[in-house]
Length: 320
Image (cartoon, rainbow, N blue to C red):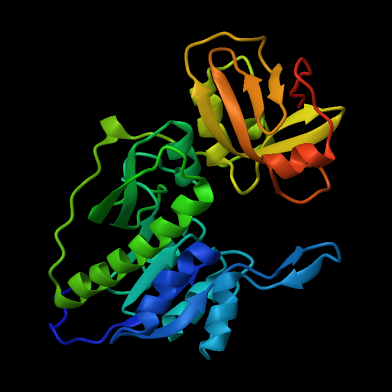
């Protein structure tokens, strides 16, 4: 297939689901190219009433007057045929599901994905969380052409940013989302001009970033303070790293490392609970900055301690 002419206006199918995808979606809407259809997940039950709610991408697509497809199965041949009827030149995928070959080969210029890591590091569903859990000082975004095996396709563009030592997953998510939108726009222009240079991923440097499960979020107070601090910020604001006090779940959403080397108390022991909540780790001490008791709202530590009695010598204990 010959490359498109430099002034070619591409017909694009956009595929995405959550808030992370919205800056990229909006950048394409504002570009010279045309979104001919949007693919997202079926509406899902949410909230206390379990009412069906559309995804963030669906709401944005409807506001823009675009046709929306919500296939139950991406392998449904009717879905692939509907895509073909839209005659897309290119598919852009941001925070969506794994596409079968029968779908990502529909656009004649291919399909590319935006991933929130510097591939091949952190392949999988939760790259932001795992980068923070591992204490990375740098991360970024990658665009790559799709292959059948998830997150393994040829690399197009990468951009890196530094990671703050107390930055949470929510904060890093927002920065990468905006960074990614620019990289998506640049990738589309390279493809439109037929000016893409790709490279294979180095499998020797590949690392996983599997889906976050409840066990991932459990705080083990026997671990070093640095490890626990990284878990807390990786799980903030959601789903939240958790421990227990008086048989109630206590989510810790922000923390600060007071000491990385000392052994001032037993793991999980509260060392101070006046205007500050200090807890002993297996090595070192953490100061809890923001937290949430089960069934209550998120509070800073001073507000929390005014309404909930904790004392030095009490313990936080985690149970699965």
